[in-house]
Length: 273
Image (tube, rainbow, N blue to C red; front, top):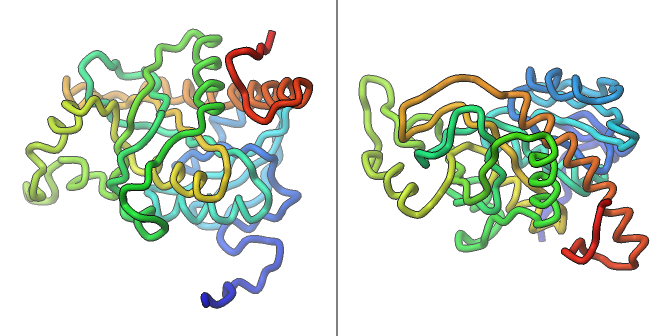
């Protein structure tokens, strides 16, 4: 039998330093702590709640909908800590808001990618569940993100994401001194042939843990680079933040419609209008 956690805090979480009263039911998860300020700029109001290591948390409202944001740092290990501790304080929905590299030629820098599922090339989720367990995004979150991108008029793509543990070798880039990992030459081509849309570093762990714990999760990333065309620009960073913010509001409206209709899940027969 596993021992109880060493964490002496019953309510305030060890890494995030938040408690149940510090966060809303839905939390946006950027990697970069500096991105937090760009996210809350879209909200009606906000209050900073915690800042410990790479984890910064703020809570506010958007169009009357409570919303929070917690930065996760780089990579799946730190993102999994955020998911664990947010789940412990009652969060029900999490949306990763990030940047990525696209690997399909038709995807432009500044476009959005809304993940439907992810290739688990990171190792964190392997410590939770067998390697053939799928990292699938919740379809309600996907629907809300698509609806938000449509309403905002942003170009977007939906599909499978690959999550890696390494920015360099794990994504087919040369390491220091030109080092190349085994299989690096074929990695991007193989993913492209499998119709994978993009590469980043946190999605599959977030989605896997959310599914294991019965939570809703989704991912929206802005394309910073196209690995096929060689184009790279930090353009459109705010688009993913605005889309995820609006999606949170739409999810709240969807949940209200479900309650009124007496159903548990959103479906095509329901309407937000």
